[in-house]
Image (tube, rainbow, N blue to C red):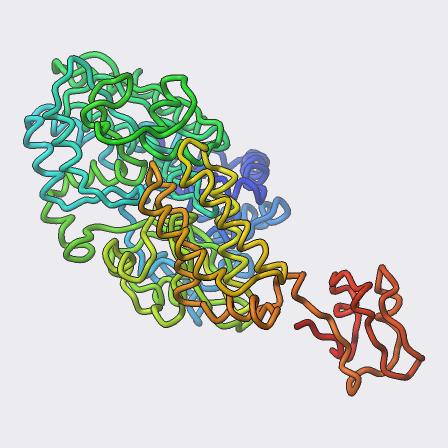
Length: 598
């Protein structure tokens, strides 16, 4: 066994990768070789640390020095000063990771992490996801061994049921009950499937688990296979996740080689293997029956239920389907017991939830919090608040299937039932924050445009109904809204929710209905006053020059690309609204802030 005096953990998740972490890794290798430190310092490429806003992230242990926004040029200083001379490079540290006396904080003292509880993400940013030995060192595959050697399938299912774990894919159906249904279904062949087709705009929770801890999903799927009587599993992952696909492929190969997938696992009669299936990015393939159709090689379209997949699923056989985050919780529940899991979260929503925090927020990234944590805590204490001193306006949870939560509900606990009560839903875990500059009508139009584009077209309520809703929203944002449009949107939305074929169609109107519920005044301003209060909808904008502030300097005239501004030098200028294209170039150039939009 090799021993190293220092470990350098470099984030290898997609977020940091896009910021250049691969180049940082290669530069570290070269600098360590140059300074003869290869045998003293171990480089580890990990998954996501969570704080994507400050990537690439590098953490050096045993000191726990948290370096942020590390560039290739910074590497030589970290190596020569910190790793060679033992002097931490304080100006490269993440600002919140050092005390006033310049002592290093532990990660659980950093504001971003102190209110988090990482269960599904427990190994992300900790281990090398391409090294099965590191997963095993953190109790990996111990849960699988426990169920195969000490428990019956029925006892395994009872533990999952007793834990209170609910599916993290959106609807929150009790996981143990789903396992029990599939186990009791009659069939000569059964399957275990993993939904890794994360299609919500702004969502990257499942991707990060697969990139940072792929073996946790493989182990959980093998446990599920044992519990329901299946010997074959499929992971359906979108091809747009190349790092996740690569690490899953490596992990499956390593598990087979170690005898943890394949025939007679742990010397028992149980056999189980896994295959990957790559999706082409269709949002509808996140729906369980459409996903299974795609695995079978058919067009990804949902089918009516019943029969449910537990009875008739993949290839017409009983099938268990959970998403990545659900599976990531399974090994810990087996090892620690259901009572341990029940101590986390709320009465009806046990455990934690992973959120992809994005939008108008300082600390964009991946967070995992106990169920029941309030929206205010997530946004202001973990997320660091709204940039530039702006006011919080709303948060969209659940992506195109969810709803907008206004400021009056900031203290709502985040759990399945509380979100449903206020017109939103948990969804898979995307959480997009909006500030005072966002137009809620335009937000509703954006999400509905996505849904219309991604509709499979199989059922008329989704294919036609959402299209009609989008046409009304387009008219409203272009200043062509009419009295009665709001009521038409509400009527269409309720009908689609009641009659669409699948869950994606049934929830498609949610962003529209929730913004009407909480921001009806913005809709009315667009329709009646022909104004966009947030100044976003261009067709309703007017850029004007305030005569009392204008000094007639002429900079706006030079900036205007369509010659819409005129006036004598040193006199107030005016804008010809018939020519103005509302590009805002004049506003940027005006040194006196005399040009405003409204």
